[in-house]
Length: 160
Image (tube, rainbow, N blue to C red):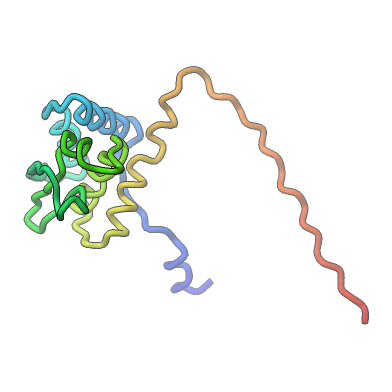
């Protein structure tokens, strides 16, 4: 495999906090969405910023941004504008808690990666929540028996 092919085939690598820390951040953001206590939100953002050795961003709350089209915006000076959960619940067709939290992770992806690329921020948000809810169930995990892949036969050559 050539070097150019190898680089394009590998996905972008990201350093993320451990699952336990990400789960804590997720619980704090969920608590803020439900109870609107600023302390939950500040602790969640401070935890992410501390992991990446960054100052916590300044966050301003709005009723809506871009005429209701976007949930947040990150600026070059490190300021993040977000739609407050109270306004999020009120005026949107898709107003779930998960979507708001995903929007917060997305804007933090812009802040942490200092990237204007939407793809990178989306990847950060997706990977930040990956595996967070899987460990929430209680009790021992069942071992899943893996089945071997069926052997694929080579096609026979045709005679003329």
